[in-house]
Amino acid sequence: MSHRVLTALIAAVFTSSIPTSLRAQALPAGVTERGITVPGPVPLPGTLTLPDGEGPFPGVILVHGSGAGDRDETMPPPLAPNKPFQDLAWGLAQRGIVVLRYDKRAKVQGTWYIGKNFTVYDESIQDALSALTLLRQQPQVDIRHTFQLGHSLGGMLAPRIGKADGKVAGIIIMAGATRVQLIDQMDRQGAYFQSLAGADSDKVKAQRAAAAPIFAKVRGLKPADTSDNTPIPGMGGTGTRYWLDLAAFDPALTMRDLHVPVLVLQGMRDFQVAPDQVDDWLKVVGPRPDITVNRYPSLNHLFMTGTGTPSPADYATRGHVDQQVIADIAAWVKAR
Image (cartoon, rainbow, N blue to C red; front, side, top):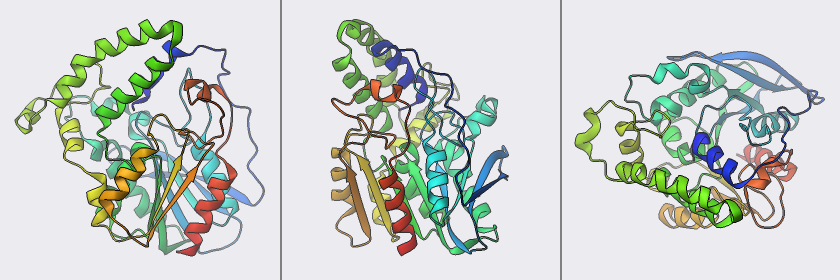
């Protein structure tokens, strides 16, 4: 779900005094970082996180979910500004893996999209491919062992990125093993928020009612509509080509044709990408010995711990990606 729509609905469901920043954290022992720029139509500032030693080490790029995310995938207001990509980068580097993360194009130069009937290739895929190429150019990286890790939308797109790249040693999908169309995912999340809203349910219901004709327009798009270059109101600047491109893409079918090892991670408290979507994805991909699936009972969409009924209140809590998740990723990468 786009951060703009998600945060608007959360604001209607949940209000709290949330700090504007996390307490500054010191770089962990055994890890160094340096700035790096991912080349492309918009050069993207990034960070290369390195283990101590000469290597060569396996390397991983981190691919964001939807929205104008920074390199740490810092959550936007009114959410607590947790930094799951920073957690992953530091934790994996401590375990001997180089990590490249970068600011999204929409974060660096949102005006680039104005007047362009863009798709997720422009939003995410092109820059991920460039990041993989850049990762392999680093002397500390073993070019035979480079991986992509996608979270949420980045996980859903992971098979497309891997197929286009053709060189990845493996794919890690975090909360992205789904075949549900993004527009339907947004609608499902809105319905879930409404079920939790209590006294504010009328406000959420009104927001969903206002969005309904926009969602209906997106679902009704036809290939002949691609000539329309006008952004769809309320959809974050996206237009017809963006949604038609997504509608034509089945992540599981693409994954079925991509024969590389896959690690699928799913938090069972995730209400943004529901856990049952993994099972639907797996049915289409088919049984494969090179697919590993890890499910975490207490973790949410950010792979942080929570309790009780999953809700937007989870995102008000300052936290970190669960250490077991980081350990599982590191062990899987090193075993490839």
